[in-house]
Amino acid sequence: MMISNATIMKRSIYLTALILGVGILPAVIQEARLSSLREEHRKLRDEAVSLGIQGVSAESDDGERSTKRLRADQEKHADRVGSSLIGFARELEAMQDGGMSADSEFQERAMKVMVELSELDSKQLERVINRLKQEEGISGKSRGEIISYAIMAVADRKPEAAVSLYVATADLLDKSMGSHVITSALGRWAAASPQEAMDWLAENESKHPGVIDEDARRSVLSGVAANDPVLAFDLLDDVGLENRHMAIHAILVTGSNDPQQRTSMLEALRGYLNSMPDLVQREETGAKALELLARSIDHEGFEPLTEWMNTSKLTALEKQQFAGGLTYFTTKEDTGKWVEWMDQNLSPEEVGGPVKDLVSEWTDQDYQAAGKWLGTLTEGPARAAAVEAYAGAVASYDPQVAAQWALTLPPGPAQQTTLQAVHENWPTSDPDGAAEFARQHGIE
Image 1: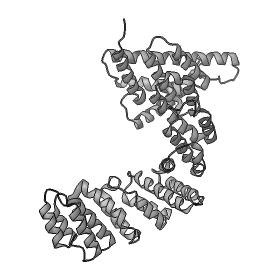
Image 2 (image 1 turned 120 degrees about the vertical axis):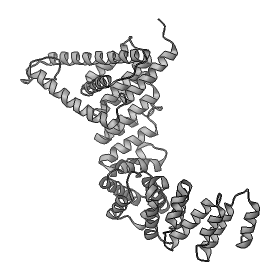
Image 3 (image 1 turned 90 degrees about the horizontal axis):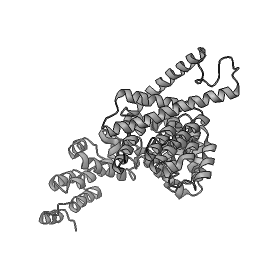
């Protein structure tokens, strides 16, 4: 019976969803269950060895098994795992054809296949992959995706093996799937063996241009940075990333979830910046790096972050650069606290820009909360900037309220600038009102 292209495509989508997600379980639950299954698998393997069962363990307790017998047992085990994987692929296709979804029992078996795959050595994995390449009982698209599944199953524990297997099967894999596999494996490999991963990158970048992309290069930097951020900065120019700022960001975000590691990343950044002879480039690079760091730590609240800043002894310039990266989408309910922090930590000459940006975004998202908070802010450069931003934002739909806020500022340049902002944002549907407002306040 001929299978239509539409059916093959549906199978492909279905396989991809299951392969990448192993069912519907969240990643944290998957990892916990995989760890449990690995331990269970090891216990069963050890028990089999103690009973003299062949084909499970690499060597017996007394170590007398010959190399030839050992190799035969390993090959048998690999063949058994390969058969399980092929059966798994066929079952996936049958489920799709029958319109069935993966239940918990199926997900459990899928994870057990992952465990067995992840514990094979490199030669066993090659044997399984070769078996899959030759298998005719599944579609070509499914075969490629199952091979990707096999490679991903070992990438976390044997990343160098995963990379080698990818190279051997790249012609069978979907480019997007290949990119996912290689990026993940390269990052893990770089964390364990930075120089080996860098050497592989240099040797293979021209062979796989569609897969060794910016994401893969950033992954290598992140992997190196996880253990040695100073080395990661040293390798910055060797990785070949076109966007230096995003390369630095890849290093910094590696430790953004942990305050201590974040400090290590910051210290490495300082060392890298100090090595730059061009002062203008140094300041521009530092500003962009701190801005990107500020935008990557939206999972932490105001108190933990400011405590980290104090512990890490951010300089006045670094605080200014960090403030430039704060947005309402990272500060959220702590936006008012961050404006007050800026008022206390930034110079009067520098506080206006970041405060205006932050309050404008806040007002666009929740003008009532922003207005309520604004009424509690004490006089000073930060309040003047906040009022200007708030009044300018609400002027387009409530110019009278905007004007009232502008007039709460003491007469002078700040008030006049705010009145000008209100006039510029006055509703276009009310030209007469805008003209009268301009006349009252001497706006040309």
